[in-house]
Amino acid sequence: MTATNLLQIDKLSKSFAENQVLKSIDLSVAAGEVVSVIGPSGSGKTTLLRCVNFLEVYDGGSIQIDGREVGYVDTSSRKRRGEVDLAGMRAETGMVFQSFNLFPHLTAEQNVMLGLRRVRKKPLKEAREIAQHWLSRVGLSHKADALPSELSGGQQQRVGIARAVAMDPKILLLDEITSALDPELVNEVLDVVRQLAVDGMTMLMVTHEIAFARDASHRIVFMADGLVSAQGKPDDLMAEVATNERLRNFLSRFSATAH
Amino acid sequence: MAGSMGYQLSFNQIWTNFDKLAEGLLLSLGLAFISILIGAIIGLVLAIWYVSAGRVARTFISGYVEFIRNVPLLLLVYLVFYGLPTVVNISYSAPVSFVVTLSLYAGAYLVEVFRSGLDAVPKGLLDAGKAMGLTPWQRLLYVRLPTMTRITLPALSNTFISLFKDTSIASVIAVPELTYGAQWINNKTFRIVEVYAVTTVLYVVTGYAILFGLRLLERRFRVER
Ligand SMILES: Nc1ncnc2c1ncn2[C@@H]1O[C@H](COP(=O)(O)OP(=O)(O)O)[C@@H](O)[C@H]1O
Ligand SMILES: [Mg+2]
Image 1: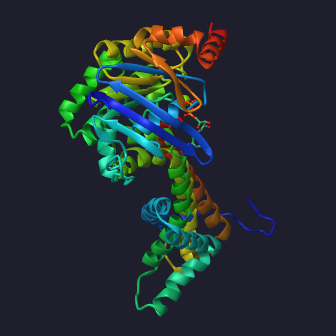
Image 2: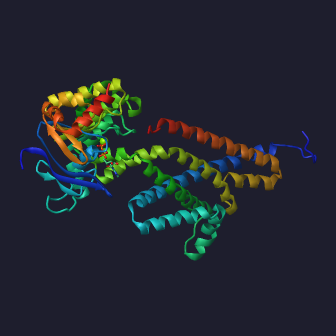
C-alpha cells in the first residue's frame, strides 16, 4: 500500500438491499492525477464517487484520503465518525453533480461563498474575493448576481465547478457533469475541467465523453458489474480492447450511439 | 328603490357607524397576523421535530394535528375560552383566548404544510450541502429552510386568507372584530341587509388585496425545481 496516494480505495463493497452494486473495488489516485471512470450505466460509478465523500455509507473495505479513513473513525473498527467530523472530512473533497444542484435561492456568487463562509469560516470580504476569482476563472464574472434559474445549463455547471474548487479541496469528484447538457454547451464545461487538469487539480471523474477522457486524463478506469474490469493509461486501456471483451462491447456500443 | 316587502335600502346609518367596521377590520387583520406568526412557529418547530424524531414524538405530533383538524373551530374557541380556564387555573381576555385558539389551529395545519415542504426539498440540494461540508444544522439553516419557505409560500398565503376569514368566529365570544362590528350595527339599526352587504364587501376586497400582495411576494421568491 502506497502512502503517496491521495485517494486509496481497497476492496470497497456496497449493497443496496439485495443488490450488490460494488463488489470489491481497488482504486488509487495520486496527488495531481486525473483519473476517469467509464463503464456501462448501472455499473456503480455514481455509487463509487458517492462513497468517497460518504454520501453513501459503504459496507466493506476501506477508503482513505490522505491517510485518513473516510466515514469511519479508523480502518479496523466500523465506528462512524460524528456528524461534525464527517462534515469536516467532506470539506476536503469537492463534488460536481450531474444535475448541478445549485442552491436555487442563492446567486451564483452566494452559491460559491456559502461553503467559504460557513465551512471555511472566511471573513465576508475574503470569501467574496475568492468567489469572484473562481467565477472569473470559469468565465462567469458577469453572472455573479444571477440566480441559477437565470443561467443556462452550461453556466450553472460552471458555477457548480467554481463552488467546488473554491473550497480548495484535496480532490475533486465529478459525476457525468455534462450529461444533462445540450450538446452545444458541453465544451464550455469540459474546457474548464481541462484547465483545472493543467493546473494540477487532483480529479476523479465519471464521464461518458470517451474522447475527453482519453485526452484529459492520466488514467482511465473501466468499471463493469461492480468491479474494476480494466485500467491504465488511456492508450494502454484502448489497446486492451483486444483482450477484454466487456470493454470491447462497451466501447463499440458507445461509438455506435455516439455521432 | 323598493324591496318586495317594502324594505327601503338605506346605507346612512352604516356610514355613521362605519368606525365599528373599520376598527373591526383592523382587529381581524391583527388577529390573523399574530395567529399566523405564532402558528408558523408552532408548525415549523413541530415539522422539524417530526422529520428528525422517533416514533413517540411523531405520534404525539400527529395526535395534535388530528385532534385540531377534527374539531370544529367554533368548538375549539369555546373549549379554550370557557373550558380551559375552569380546568386549569388561568384567566385571559377574549381576544387573547382567541389568538391562542387560532394559533393552535393554524399550527396544526402548518405542521403539515411545512412537513411536506421539508420533504419536497430536492435531495440533490441536501447532497450538495453535505458535499461542501455543511453540518446538519447548517444544512437545515442554509439549504433546507430557505428552499422549503419558497416551496410553501403559496400554501402559507392560502392559510393566511383562511385565518383572516376565520377571525369572524371570534364574534361568538364578543371580540370586537369585523363580524362583531357588523352585528353590533345591526342590533342598533336593524339594517341587516346593508350592514352585511358592506361587511361582505370588506372581507372580499381585503382578502383579495392580501392575496394579490402575497402572490407578488411568491413570484419574487419562486423556486425553480
Ligand atoms: N439509493 C439507491 N437505492 C437503491 N439502489 C440504488 C441506489 N443508488 C443506486 N442504486 C442502484 O445501484 C446500481 C448502480 O447505480 P449507479 O451507481 O448510479 O450506476 P452508474 O452511475 O454506473 O450508472 C443501479 O442498479 C442502481 O439502481
Ligand atoms: Mg451515474
